[in-house]
Length: 121
Image (cartoon, rainbow, N blue to C red):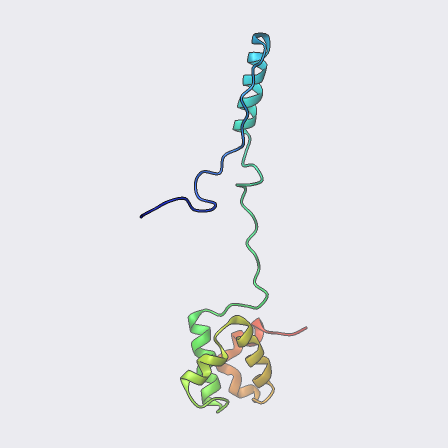
């Protein structure tokens, strides 16, 4: 068997109801319906603000630089180990906070943008 119904699939239309109205009110009802249809997006389809991540998300270049920095300063022994401790934004932040205090200022040139990104007030 193929296909079939899926929960939440299909057009998300408004619920409607069939009613009989007096002929004298037809033009007013049609005007009301047209006004309703022509208004901008309703709350269901209206664009929402994107959710700001709790932890900064590093791009590929920043991740590569951070992992190389961890290896260069002997905080980890291999790329695999560096990848494991920087696998998510939360792990990256925690790893950064854990090791940044053990390095000198001149050793941090490779990750200056991360220092600004993870600056703690």
